[in-house]
Image (cartoon, rainbow, N blue to C red):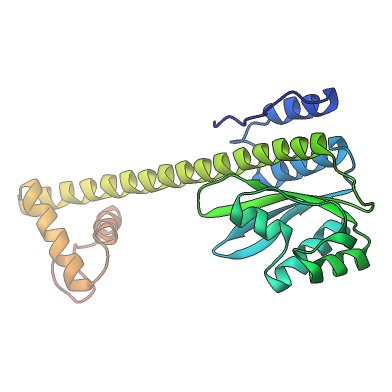
Length: 251
């Protein structure tokens, strides 16, 4: 499992929260539940936080993976609708985006006006440093201006690091599980092909190579997989049927 980088020392509540996150077993807990735990801990420990969400972008399509309140989801979606805003810029640019006061914000003026209408006055979006097909940001919102000082921004950044670790490990676990399943299927295919070869060797007095060549020819003739031909041979033998293909040709 990859290690998060907690950075400098933090106030005790943040340290305790990061300690709780370190106990998560990424192979056993589903990614949504891990991200939800991260967002809720960020909400309870980042000074000034009133709503938290996590944005994920895959194939240029942003979605809110988890959120702690409708306000966070609404603020995220306002940005997705126009494909611009602090959470998207943080995710794509890899930089922390801090809005101290929506009334003074000049970088995203239209979004700032909409955020104010929803009741949000300040925010911090920190990038999730996952250099893979998925990028994202941890977003922290507040209903008062100047809610986040340097210490709060640093704490949010640390929660973002843990979210990135969760994403990286979840993707690694999924990739490993997929590889294991592919290997299991390959071994199962090899086993049934070996059975079919043994049957043909006994019936036709052939070598293993000749028996396999017979299976391959039948696969090409019937335009189906070698494994399916082998399964058909084994099934027919177990049922006491003759080894004849559907078209009447002898296997």
